[in-house]
Length: 257
Image (cartoon, rainbow, N blue to C red; front, side, top):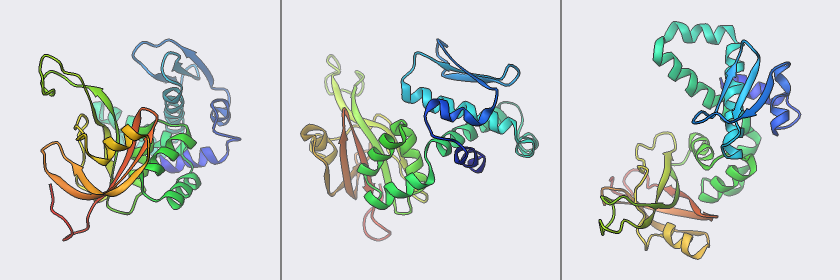
């Protein structure tokens, strides 16, 4: 799927909305309200439908996802292999996952990924730059960056969220707190931060959001269990959120959570 998407992207005049459609011939692109659905590909009528009421960056990823559906349906060998290996609901799940993989490969050229990692290293700044320059969501950038990072790094996107009564110190006034929105580790990293994990007020990630200044220092991973794993933290504030990388200790350098 990555090869299909990368080959398709290589033949495009650009990566804007209309250029992304360039290689699909007579397939039409239509924007319209779609309720809770982000988009769809109708191979019979040769049309891609995109929800006109979702965020532009979500529309763009959905378009790349639906293009990947078209590419997959056009590859008889890959489609046959999938039908041989899976069936029913599992087949549909695998196809959706593959189309997400294809979408990321379409929107994030390998050259851009290499440039960002070479210039900024596996840092929070790299995560912010990849999201901005590829015009993709922070979560898409995070998963892609994590997949291509060789160092033992855990990435996270943190933002202020409203706490439930169960999570708040005062059940009668839940309030808000800085929490983990999404997290993923590089290959071989077995730890992750669950969505909703609170960030302590004195942690570098919280300080970066408060001061609007990037921070890189030795600190820890604030696991929800309360245990702390030593890590080199790189926190980069980006509008209302913080892009974070935790460089974990190698074996023997720190304790596990």
